[in-house]
Length: 406
Image 1: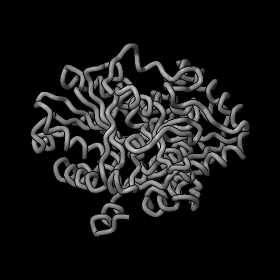
Image 2: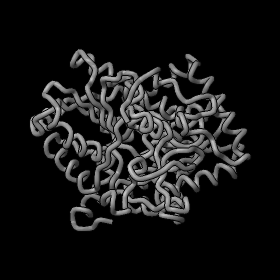
Image 3: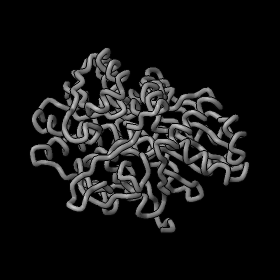
């Protein structure tokens, strides 16, 4: 579809949480009062100068923002095309973009008087961020994590436990992110009075997709200001990995109405789109309802959610945030995919050229930049969202390179 802008793309969702045909809130009746309470609390907080000032202080003095916009000189020279910049959100406290959103949600939880925080995590970075902020504010923290991810993200499990979190391994289903989110939702339904569910991505029932997006938009706002300072103009293209898609929407959203800025979201193609072992919902899925919202999902012929695969635990999810589903449907963002092998090769190239080991998640974005940049002129400014660092993935990478492709 060719994108044609007729009005702002930054206004959504509507009052019921819909981005076109996607989004909404499909939750048990037990949760509706809490969802409405959360919507009201967030609406108040986003217009409260005291809340915004307190959050800005923590973003600067605790998280370490703004994160740098770094000119990747050697990668630019190697690819002989676009001028490549990294938005270095892996330099945030805890090592990823996740902490931007968690700070906001924990502040909302405190505003609502909730002292028990639950979260789901795949790669572990959202869990680490949640455990970190719960420790900072003295809150109880329970993190649900698929047992497969517990094994391949052992370092982050140890970090969460060190921070005082109760990490609960989930052995149902594929034992990955989808199943962790299922268990967290079951917990929430059972403990509605005292519990706040801190969702880590732009999925779930309204108002979560818009709330998480708003907290992550600091990435794109900083990128805009930093690029103007460095180059005197906006970037020509933006590239980010897509699981649920919070890092990508955080980068993209402040630029959505700048029609000259190209945007690329990169899904996990796993062992290949034809293999059946991937997590590319937009490339190979169809609309359905999961975890409280309507979006693109990987389903079988009977509508059952399929098991998915990615070497990256953070992209190993059978759906995508509803705003991404909408942006795909209107043609504003082009969604691509990268295989495990492409991501590993991109990670190695980045490490050896720039002295930066990215997480496996943004390595998927780098893989597509390696493909796209040589086709661009030398004055093309390309920004890749480096949304996490690779410390957590080293054991998994070594295993893969040693011949294991689980």
